Length: 383
Ligand SMILES: [Zn+2]
Image (cartoon, rainbow, N blue to C red):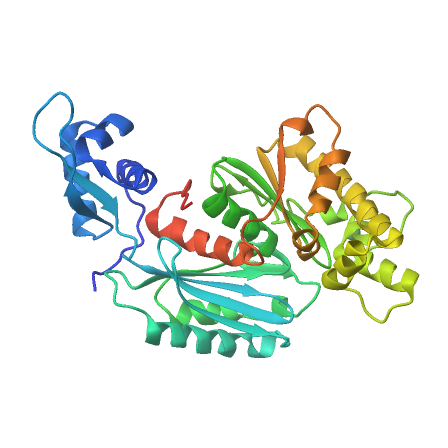
């Protein structure tokens, strides 16, 4: 294996590597044209990238119309290295091992479990050790691991987790001591935004709204997560909808997530209909039967959520807002209902859509953090 140093690569090297990734197949002359670097620099840097096995020569291209030699085309080595990603929910663990281009090698999914501080390190080590056993041979091996946390994360520390006690765990230090690749943690809604940015969007400015028990937004600008000073940027679930409304555990009254979270919508519909249990599947069954109460419930949810989305658009001016919610995935007409509510001239130019990553946006965002770090490309796009 080539020894991998996690140093900052030269800016020119980053530009050239990113150009090769974006263009799929490209000659040295075209790289010089696209990056504005001279041919000697391009030649020296591509030589280094070839030695590092981050790119390879793929085939002879067509001669340019000015005549001359046929160029050799360069392409990104999609199998140069591997990345591990985790999504740590309060009752599940999702993990994946993927090549540096996002192609999945192996996944592990544990559902209906209790994720807790006392066991999380050993659970993660088991999964990582399995990945290390099955990993294909690559020049650089595993180059990073990132875990999504359902709570507030400030750089390397977990500040607050409402649904489990991972804020009392030192698993991050444990992993950093045991393995020689870099290990990172981030908030799950932030990672979902980065996953969409990297894999599903051509835009530079994107907001992803994650709706589960609470509501949180991830904000990405040119490949960089905007987390604020304390990691709390985008906590729109705690923006106030009704000043003297329902009490929220955060200390405010009338927070958006006390009205527009999936949990609240299910609970209100359950109580109204006298049902034992409601989830997105059950609500969908009622919607499909054109049940008046169900149609009113999804309309109300969309109307309230659209207020939160309107506020986000006013604050961050994104190109696109992506909705990550099992309810909106199962009942996509709710996205249309949100769009109908967004009447301001500002929001008309913003694309509002469902996620294209199913329930894997956080996992792909975790992948993207490690891939950005290893390749040293902040605006990395792999779609
Ligand atoms: Zn609140």
